[in-house]
Length: 75
Figure: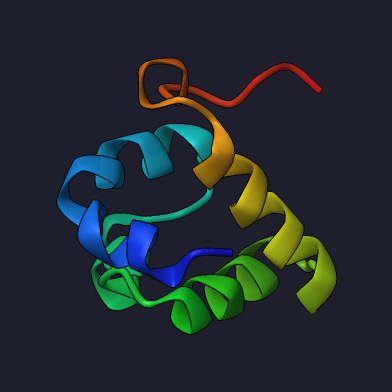
């Protein structure tokens, strides 16, 4: 995962993140502040993911083209 993507695009990604992971609160997003490790921990806390699953979810999200990232795809 490219940590710079998350940090560099944080302000642009915040609304997409809330649409993608609907259980995250504004406080959660504020706490993450573009930090990959914090993001992974929050996903683990909110969704009960193991570290590997949280990393995989975040990587998949970051690899989606910007114009297609607005809401979570159907599972």
